[in-house]
Amino acid sequence: MLRVTYRGAKRIAVLVVGGTLLSFGILLLVLPGPGLPLIFFALTVLATEFLWARLWLRRARVGARLVRRKANRWRRSPPREHP
Image 1: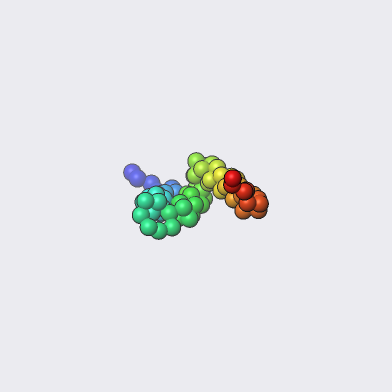
Image 2 (image 1 turned 90 degrees about the vertical axis):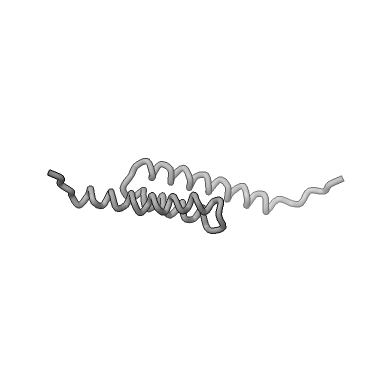
């Protein structure tokens, strides 16, 4: 007999919703739209129940932080003179 618990049903619902959002986010990387924010949001939803999503989200946050630091350094640097 199939016995569905609340926790199991919640995990399935999170997987379906998060997986759908992640699929649309990946699709929006090539189509016009906010692909990266949707991917971050999907990983946040998935991270509520799945360890692998937490690890991906942590890696994405670290990468975004590094990109932001590099962009700030680039923006603050004085312009170079070209010969």
